[in-house]
Amino acid sequence: MSETSTGRAPLPLILIIKFVLNVAMAWFLATQLDQYFQLTGGLGAYVVVGALLTLMNMIVRPLLHIITLPLKLFATLAAVIIVQAGFVQLTVMIVRKMDPAVLTLEIFGGLWGWIVVAVILGFGNWLIKVALK
Image (cartoon, rainbow, N blue to C red; front, side, top):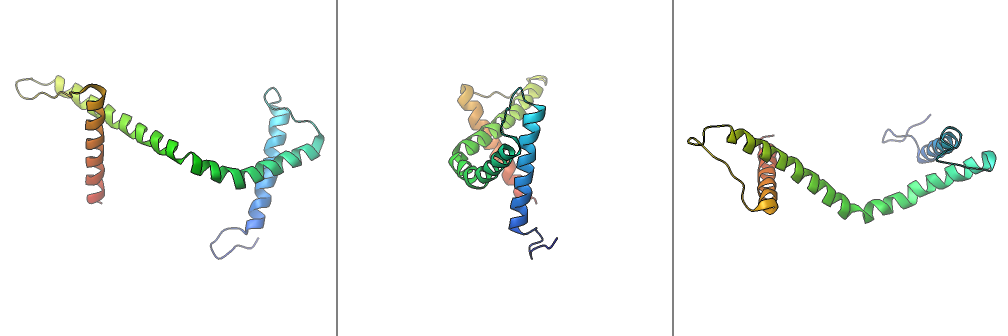
């Protein structure tokens, strides 16, 4: 098997491998999970469905990635904010166990206050991490 200068297999070989694997997946689904996936037409049907899956993955999937990018960015940002809010909540819970004469910590502003604090602390911690690399 010859490799290109980038160390990857040639594109036609990659496409053939993807095609064969998609045919195998169609066969597996039709034979092992027939309660969910039914395909009739024999070997020709597996080949056609495998080819369609390969083409769809080559052409449609990149377009869907572009179209759904804003949703992915929103979901990632929401997950980061939720994780950071969890750290803030844990910090608040620990501080509440301490002597209130020494220190107190409260987050005001309801959900919006928590979001603002979480975003600022998260961004600040990210900057610190980047600066100290």
